Amino acid sequence: MSKIVEIQNVSKIIKGRKIIDSLSFEVNKGEVFGFLGPNGAGKTTTIRMLVGLISITSGDIKIAGHSVKTDFEKAVGKVGAIVENPEMYKFLSGYKNLLHYARMSKDIKKEKIDEVVKLVGLTDRIHDKVKTYSLGMRQRLGLAQALLHDPELLILDEPTNGLDPAGIREIRDHLRMLARERNMAVIVSSHLLSEMEMMCDRIGIIQTGKLVDVQLISDFVQGTEKVYEIEVSNNKEAQKCVKGLFPDMTVQVIEKGIVAPLKKEDIPLVMKELIMADFQIYGVKEVSKTLEDRFLEVTENKEGALHA
Ligand SMILES: Nc1ncnc2c1ncn2[C@@H]1O[C@H](COP(=O)(O)OP(=O)(O)OP(=O)(O)O)[C@@H](O)[C@H]1O
Image 1 (cartoon, protein in one colour):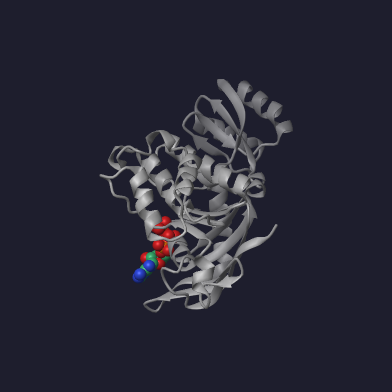
Image 2: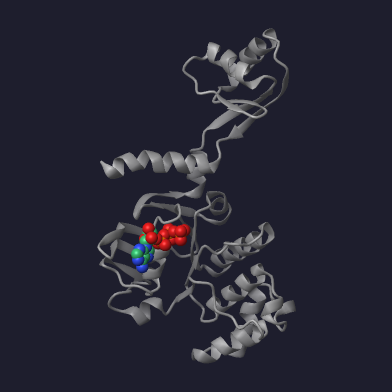
Protein backbone atom coordinates (compact mmCIF):
# COMPACT_ATOMS: atom_id res chain seq x y z
CA MET A 1 0.00 0.00 0.00
CA SER A 2 1.37 3.40 -0.82
CA LYS A 3 1.27 6.12 1.75
CA ILE A 4 -0.17 9.50 0.97
CA VAL A 5 0.22 11.26 4.31
CA GLU A 6 3.26 11.20 6.56
CA ILE A 7 3.00 13.01 9.85
CA GLN A 8 6.53 13.26 11.20
CA ASN A 9 7.12 14.15 14.80
CA VAL A 10 4.69 17.06 14.70
CA SER A 11 4.22 19.34 17.68
CA LYS A 12 2.11 22.44 18.10
CA ILE A 13 2.51 25.03 20.79
CA ILE A 14 -0.25 27.60 21.24
CA LYS A 15 0.22 30.40 23.76
CA GLY A 16 3.04 28.51 25.46
CA ARG A 17 0.99 25.32 25.79
CA LYS A 18 1.95 22.13 23.97
CA ILE A 19 -1.32 21.16 22.33
CA ILE A 20 0.18 18.48 20.06
CA ASP A 21 3.19 16.51 21.24
CA SER A 22 5.49 14.64 18.79
CA LEU A 23 2.73 13.12 16.69
CA SER A 24 3.78 10.60 14.02
CA PHE A 25 1.66 8.38 11.81
CA GLU A 26 0.99 7.56 8.18
CA VAL A 27 -2.14 7.16 6.09
CA ASN A 28 -2.31 4.98 2.98
CA LYS A 29 -4.18 5.35 -0.27
CA GLY A 30 -7.49 3.50 -0.34
CA GLU A 31 -8.03 3.48 3.41
CA VAL A 32 -10.38 5.27 5.75
CA PHE A 33 -8.34 6.35 8.73
CA GLY A 34 -10.18 7.34 11.88
CA PHE A 35 -8.62 9.94 14.09
CA LEU A 36 -10.19 9.23 17.40
CA GLY A 37 -9.98 10.97 20.73
CA PRO A 38 -12.01 12.63 23.45
CA ASN A 39 -13.05 16.28 23.18
CA GLY A 40 -10.05 18.55 23.43
CA ALA A 41 -7.53 15.79 22.58
CA GLY A 42 -6.13 17.74 19.63
CA LYS A 43 -7.89 16.28 16.59
CA THR A 44 -9.01 19.57 15.09
CA THR A 45 -5.63 21.18 15.75
CA THR A 46 -3.89 18.34 13.89
CA ILE A 47 -6.31 18.55 10.98
CA ARG A 48 -5.89 22.31 10.79
CA MET A 49 -2.13 21.78 10.48
CA LEU A 50 -2.72 19.11 7.82
CA VAL A 51 -4.61 21.51 5.59
CA GLY A 52 -2.42 24.51 6.32
CA LEU A 53 -4.93 26.54 8.33
CA ILE A 54 -2.38 26.88 11.12
CA SER A 55 1.38 26.52 11.17
CA ILE A 56 3.36 23.55 12.48
CA THR A 57 5.60 24.41 15.44
CA SER A 58 8.04 21.55 14.85
CA GLY A 59 8.20 18.39 12.74
CA ASP A 60 6.69 18.13 9.28
CA ILE A 61 3.70 16.81 7.38
CA LYS A 62 4.12 15.39 3.90
CA ILE A 63 1.22 14.86 1.53
CA ALA A 64 1.97 12.86 -1.61
CA GLY A 65 5.64 13.41 -0.77
CA HIS A 66 5.39 17.22 -0.60
CA SER A 67 6.06 19.09 2.61
CA VAL A 68 3.18 21.22 3.89
CA LYS A 69 5.84 23.54 5.30
CA THR A 70 8.04 24.08 2.27
CA ASP A 71 5.92 23.01 -0.70
CA PHE A 72 2.45 24.01 0.44
CA GLU A 73 0.71 24.42 -2.94
CA LYS A 74 1.78 21.01 -4.16
CA ALA A 75 1.07 19.36 -0.81
CA VAL A 76 -2.52 20.58 -0.50
CA GLY A 77 -3.27 20.49 -4.23
CA LYS A 78 -4.52 16.94 -3.86
CA VAL A 79 -6.46 17.48 -0.64
CA GLY A 80 -10.20 17.91 -0.31
CA ALA A 81 -11.33 18.93 3.14
CA ILE A 82 -14.32 19.83 5.20
CA VAL A 83 -12.90 21.32 8.34
CA GLU A 84 -15.28 23.96 9.50
CA ASN A 85 -18.91 23.67 8.35
CA PRO A 86 -18.79 24.22 4.60
CA GLU A 87 -20.08 27.66 3.68
CA MET A 88 -23.10 27.33 1.43
CA TYR A 89 -25.51 29.90 0.09
CA LYS A 90 -28.81 28.68 1.46
CA PHE A 91 -30.97 30.59 -1.02
CA LEU A 92 -29.15 29.14 -4.02
CA SER A 93 -29.57 25.60 -5.26
CA GLY A 94 -26.96 22.98 -4.49
CA TYR A 95 -25.95 23.10 -8.13
CA LYS A 96 -25.42 26.87 -8.16
CA ASN A 97 -23.34 26.59 -5.02
CA LEU A 98 -21.08 24.05 -6.71
CA LEU A 99 -20.96 26.14 -9.87
CA HIS A 100 -19.96 29.19 -7.87
CA TYR A 101 -17.22 27.24 -6.16
CA ALA A 102 -16.03 25.69 -9.42
CA ARG A 103 -15.72 29.14 -11.02
CA MET A 104 -13.46 30.29 -8.21
CA SER A 105 -10.98 27.53 -8.89
CA LYS A 106 -9.69 27.03 -12.36
CA ASP A 107 -9.84 23.80 -14.36
CA ILE A 108 -13.16 22.49 -13.06
CA LYS A 109 -15.52 21.58 -15.88
CA LYS A 110 -19.30 21.33 -15.72
CA GLU A 111 -19.14 17.59 -16.35
CA LYS A 112 -17.13 17.30 -13.17
CA ILE A 113 -19.96 18.93 -11.22
CA ASP A 114 -22.43 16.38 -12.60
CA GLU A 115 -20.06 13.58 -11.72
CA VAL A 116 -19.58 14.57 -8.07
CA VAL A 117 -23.31 15.25 -7.64
CA LYS A 118 -24.02 11.73 -8.83
CA LEU A 119 -21.27 10.35 -6.65
CA VAL A 120 -22.78 11.77 -3.47
CA GLY A 121 -26.30 10.81 -4.53
CA LEU A 122 -27.77 14.31 -4.83
CA THR A 123 -28.86 14.23 -8.48
CA ASP A 124 -32.60 14.37 -7.71
CA ARG A 125 -32.38 17.37 -5.40
CA ILE A 126 -29.41 19.31 -6.74
CA HIS A 127 -31.56 22.05 -8.30
CA ASP A 128 -33.51 22.65 -5.08
CA LYS A 129 -32.46 25.42 -2.74
CA VAL A 130 -29.97 24.41 -0.06
CA LYS A 131 -32.29 25.75 2.67
CA THR A 132 -34.64 22.84 1.90
CA TYR A 133 -31.90 20.24 2.42
CA SER A 134 -31.56 18.03 5.47
CA LEU A 135 -28.33 18.27 7.43
CA GLY A 136 -27.19 14.99 5.85
CA MET A 137 -27.79 16.41 2.37
CA ARG A 138 -25.85 19.54 3.25
CA GLN A 139 -22.98 17.39 4.42
CA ARG A 140 -23.09 15.50 1.14
CA LEU A 141 -23.10 18.76 -0.78
CA GLY A 142 -20.01 19.75 1.22
CA LEU A 143 -18.50 16.44 0.26
CA ALA A 144 -19.32 17.07 -3.40
CA GLN A 145 -17.59 20.45 -3.15
CA ALA A 146 -14.51 18.86 -1.58
CA LEU A 147 -14.42 16.31 -4.41
CA LEU A 148 -14.61 18.81 -7.28
CA HIS A 149 -10.88 18.97 -7.85
CA ASP A 150 -10.30 15.20 -7.73
CA PRO A 151 -8.48 14.98 -4.42
CA GLU A 152 -6.37 11.98 -3.55
CA LEU A 153 -6.88 12.68 0.11
CA LEU A 154 -10.11 13.67 1.79
CA ILE A 155 -10.04 15.13 5.30
CA LEU A 156 -13.22 15.52 7.29
CA ASP A 157 -13.41 16.87 10.81
CA GLU A 158 -16.29 15.21 12.69
CA PRO A 159 -18.30 14.63 9.50
CA THR A 160 -21.25 13.05 11.26
CA ASN A 161 -21.66 15.73 13.93
CA GLY A 162 -25.32 16.58 14.35
CA LEU A 163 -26.53 13.98 11.87
CA ASP A 164 -29.32 11.50 12.60
CA PRO A 165 -28.60 7.75 12.17
CA ALA A 166 -29.74 7.80 8.53
CA GLY A 167 -27.48 10.78 7.77
CA ILE A 168 -24.54 9.11 9.51
CA ARG A 169 -25.08 6.03 7.39
CA GLU A 170 -25.21 8.06 4.17
CA ILE A 171 -21.89 9.73 4.89
CA ARG A 172 -20.32 6.52 6.08
CA ASP A 173 -21.31 4.62 2.95
CA HIS A 174 -20.02 7.40 0.70
CA LEU A 175 -16.67 7.59 2.41
CA ARG A 176 -16.18 3.84 2.23
CA MET A 177 -17.12 3.86 -1.43
CA LEU A 178 -14.64 6.66 -2.22
CA ALA A 179 -11.83 4.76 -0.53
CA ARG A 180 -12.71 1.46 -2.16
CA GLU A 181 -13.63 2.52 -5.67
CA ARG A 182 -11.46 5.58 -6.14
CA ASN A 183 -8.50 4.49 -4.05
CA MET A 184 -8.85 7.72 -2.13
CA ALA A 185 -7.40 8.09 1.35
CA VAL A 186 -9.90 9.44 3.83
CA ILE A 187 -9.13 10.86 7.26
CA VAL A 188 -12.10 11.37 9.54
CA SER A 189 -12.02 12.57 13.09
CA SER A 190 -14.53 11.61 15.73
CA HIS A 191 -14.92 11.13 19.44
CA LEU A 192 -17.36 8.26 18.84
CA LEU A 193 -15.74 4.87 18.67
CA SER A 194 -18.90 3.05 17.66
CA GLU A 195 -19.06 5.22 14.56
CA MET A 196 -15.41 4.67 13.71
CA GLU A 197 -15.92 0.93 13.89
CA MET A 198 -18.31 0.98 10.97
CA MET A 199 -16.45 3.51 8.87
CA CYS A 200 -12.71 2.99 9.24
CA ASP A 201 -10.03 0.49 8.31
CA ARG A 202 -7.60 1.78 10.91
CA ILE A 203 -7.81 4.12 13.85
CA GLY A 204 -5.27 6.35 15.52
CA ILE A 205 -6.15 7.21 19.10
CA ILE A 206 -5.10 10.60 20.38
CA GLN A 207 -5.24 11.80 23.93
CA THR A 208 -3.97 15.08 25.37
CA GLY A 209 -2.06 15.75 22.17
CA LYS A 210 -0.23 12.42 22.03
CA LEU A 211 -0.81 9.40 19.87
CA VAL A 212 -1.77 6.55 22.16
CA ASP A 213 -2.24 3.78 19.62
CA VAL A 214 -2.66 3.04 15.91
CA GLN A 215 -4.47 -0.18 15.04
CA LEU A 216 -6.51 -1.93 12.42
CA ILE A 217 -10.08 -1.54 13.60
CA SER A 218 -10.56 -5.32 13.26
CA ASP A 219 -7.68 -5.97 15.68
CA PHE A 220 -8.99 -3.35 18.04
CA VAL A 221 -12.42 -4.98 18.09
CA GLN A 222 -10.95 -8.47 18.44
CA GLY A 223 -9.07 -7.42 21.52
CA THR A 224 -12.45 -6.86 23.09
CA GLU A 225 -13.14 -9.33 25.85
CA LYS A 226 -16.38 -11.33 25.95
CA VAL A 227 -18.52 -11.34 29.04
CA TYR A 228 -21.79 -13.04 29.99
CA GLU A 229 -24.91 -11.17 30.89
CA ILE A 230 -27.23 -13.15 33.15
CA GLU A 231 -30.75 -11.87 33.45
CA VAL A 232 -31.73 -12.80 36.98
CA SER A 233 -33.99 -11.75 39.83
CA ASN A 234 -32.44 -10.01 42.82
CA ASN A 235 -29.28 -8.88 41.07
CA LYS A 236 -27.30 -7.84 44.16
CA GLU A 237 -27.76 -11.20 45.86
CA ALA A 238 -26.98 -12.99 42.58
CA GLN A 239 -23.71 -11.05 42.42
CA LYS A 240 -22.79 -12.35 45.89
CA CYS A 241 -23.70 -15.87 44.84
CA VAL A 242 -21.39 -15.78 41.79
CA LYS A 243 -18.63 -14.12 43.83
CA GLY A 244 -18.98 -17.06 46.24
CA LEU A 245 -17.90 -19.32 43.37
CA PHE A 246 -15.24 -17.00 41.91
CA PRO A 247 -14.01 -14.66 44.65
CA ASP A 248 -11.52 -12.84 42.40
CA MET A 249 -13.93 -12.15 39.57
CA THR A 250 -15.30 -8.68 38.89
CA VAL A 251 -19.06 -9.24 38.78
CA GLN A 252 -21.01 -6.21 37.75
CA VAL A 253 -24.62 -5.53 38.79
CA ILE A 254 -26.83 -4.18 36.00
CA GLU A 255 -30.50 -3.29 36.07
CA LYS A 256 -31.77 -6.62 34.84
CA GLY A 257 -29.16 -8.87 36.42
CA ILE A 258 -25.41 -9.29 36.45
CA VAL A 259 -22.49 -9.28 34.03
CA ALA A 260 -19.44 -11.47 34.59
CA PRO A 261 -16.34 -12.43 32.55
CA LEU A 262 -17.14 -16.15 32.84
CA LYS A 263 -15.70 -18.93 30.72
CA LYS A 264 -18.25 -20.85 28.71
CA GLU A 265 -17.53 -24.05 30.64
CA ASP A 266 -18.37 -22.29 33.92
CA ILE A 267 -21.94 -21.50 32.85
CA PRO A 268 -23.56 -24.84 33.98
CA LEU A 269 -22.00 -24.52 37.43
CA VAL A 270 -23.14 -20.92 37.81
CA MET A 271 -26.67 -21.77 36.64
CA LYS A 272 -26.88 -24.69 39.04
CA GLU A 273 -25.71 -22.55 41.94
CA LEU A 274 -28.18 -19.77 41.17
CA ILE A 275 -31.10 -22.19 40.73
CA MET A 276 -30.25 -24.04 43.95
CA ALA A 277 -30.29 -20.70 45.74
CA ASP A 278 -33.79 -20.00 44.33
CA PHE A 279 -32.93 -17.21 41.88
CA GLN A 280 -35.16 -16.85 38.84
CA ILE A 281 -33.07 -16.92 35.64
CA TYR A 282 -34.59 -15.33 32.55
CA GLY A 283 -31.67 -15.52 30.13
CA VAL A 284 -27.93 -15.85 29.61
CA LYS A 285 -26.13 -14.24 26.72
CA GLU A 286 -22.61 -13.56 25.59
CA VAL A 287 -21.93 -9.88 25.06
CA SER A 288 -18.86 -7.94 23.99
CA LYS A 289 -17.60 -5.28 26.27
CA THR A 290 -18.57 -2.14 24.48
CA LEU A 291 -15.96 -0.55 22.29
CA GLU A 292 -16.23 2.47 24.52
CA ASP A 293 -15.04 0.28 27.43
CA ARG A 294 -12.18 -0.94 25.26
CA PHE A 295 -11.27 2.62 24.33
CA LEU A 296 -11.14 3.57 27.99
CA GLU A 297 -8.95 0.55 28.72
CA VAL A 298 -6.47 1.58 26.03
CA THR A 299 -6.35 5.23 27.00
CA GLU A 300 -6.22 4.53 30.74
CA ASN A 301 -3.44 1.95 30.38
CA LYS A 302 -1.39 4.23 28.21
CA GLU A 303 -2.00 7.30 30.31
CA GLY A 304 0.20 5.94 33.12
CA ALA A 305 2.96 5.31 30.59
CA LEU A 306 2.58 8.72 29.02
CA HIS A 307 2.91 10.58 32.26
CA ALA A 308 5.69 8.38 33.58
N1 LIG B 1 -6.26 28.88 19.32
C1 LIG B 1 -6.20 28.23 20.47
N2 LIG B 1 -5.86 28.88 21.61
C2 LIG B 1 -5.78 28.22 22.79
N3 LIG B 1 -6.03 26.92 22.96
C3 LIG B 1 -6.37 26.21 21.88
C4 LIG B 1 -6.48 26.82 20.57
N4 LIG B 1 -6.84 25.87 19.70
C5 LIG B 1 -6.96 24.72 20.42
N5 LIG B 1 -6.69 24.92 21.71
C6 LIG B 1 -6.70 23.91 22.78
O1 LIG B 1 -6.08 22.74 22.29
C7 LIG B 1 -6.70 21.56 22.79
C8 LIG B 1 -7.05 20.67 21.62
O2 LIG B 1 -8.13 21.25 20.89
P1 LIG B 1 -8.76 20.60 19.60
O3 LIG B 1 -9.88 21.46 19.15
O4 LIG B 1 -7.69 20.28 18.64
O5 LIG B 1 -9.32 19.24 20.19
P2 LIG B 1 -10.28 18.18 19.51
O6 LIG B 1 -9.67 16.84 19.79
O7 LIG B 1 -10.56 18.52 18.12
O8 LIG B 1 -11.58 18.32 20.38
P3 LIG B 1 -13.10 18.52 19.93
O9 LIG B 1 -13.59 17.15 19.64
O10 LIG B 1 -13.69 19.09 21.19
O11 LIG B 1 -13.11 19.45 18.78
C9 LIG B 1 -7.87 22.03 23.60
O12 LIG B 1 -7.51 22.00 24.95
C10 LIG B 1 -8.10 23.45 23.13
O13 LIG B 1 -8.65 24.22 24.16
